[in-house]
Length: 511
Image (cartoon, helix red, strand yellow):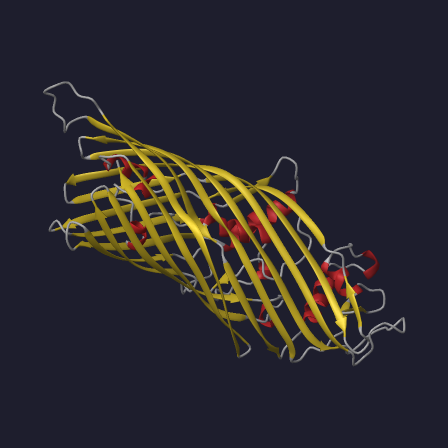
């Protein structure tokens, strides 16, 4: 299991009064992998992904499978995307900008339309009219990001944090576990023990140390879906799907600090002396891999041709996860021209994860034959996240601690999406959408951790071919802490505005 203190395993969204020290690392990751969006065509992206009641789009394979029942022809499409993430952070009055760009495949799929053969003279608008099958790929979450901040910390140092961390374990330095953060900090002369008591103090200056942090993230949550639907009397559409989920997430980070030594036992002439300048580098990496399965049931009801009502139930996602983490601490003392580096240690932990179910309700209306309005709401209970022991990794205390954190800090949330579409002529369409993902945190009474989505798009079709273009902007406010204390008021905090600017382009053909 993970035996060290993670500096920035998670970028907490907004300032919710919840600190990193209060969270177990796997509970953080479990939430990350539970907050998924719909990988979809550029048409649905332009509509703010308000798709539950719409149907007739290949995105229904990974959304409301009942929407497949509205197809009257077979179809193939794929959607590449350009993803640009920018961060503007402030740390003790100093601003830092960072960004990262990437090209991805957001969606691809194929649909087969199978009309029911009727006897001659039968009513073609009653009973089961058609069956439709689909296979699709969706990228439901993107973890790409580059986050940096830096400045002079007037309050405390990494040494203060490491000393408190070592004292919390109640061990003398001779009892430290090799590879642990407390062992590395002691071997790097960043902390001193008072006698042989298990109490530690910082060996470094605590005021106005220059600190910098950078973290580069990568990975995604994606699904392969197999779906089927039926059209009953052009009024009821029923569908079901099974999804095979793949999670890939990781980060590489580096925290640096420059300061001076204020106390040292100096047992050897080469040991750091009081007044020596130092620069430390604490590097961490995490790599998470997981696979799972879920299912969806969907219904769309069309009471009249201009109105549609849809509902989707997505089962919990049952997953098996493997987490590999590593860390290394390096400290260079400039006056003595000496450095101390610990051997990098890898920690492997496996666990099972059950992500919460999701229920979606949507409605849409066609106005005047040219305009479309659509709206969705989701209900997700993040307190329903549950971790359990994997077959080969039995760690009941670790699992129980994480499950307690889930219950203590997470709650249910509602997500809202609205969209509008206007057909200028039979070939050209314009779209706009807006969405809010609700906060998953109990203590976020001001909804500061909501995620907001703005989107717009264009569509053009000619004969059996179509092209859709969409732009989506995702805005969040995030806070970062390079390390944390028992007293959270001492935590150094960077605030950041993070924007994701995505462009989606769908190419499709009906046959």
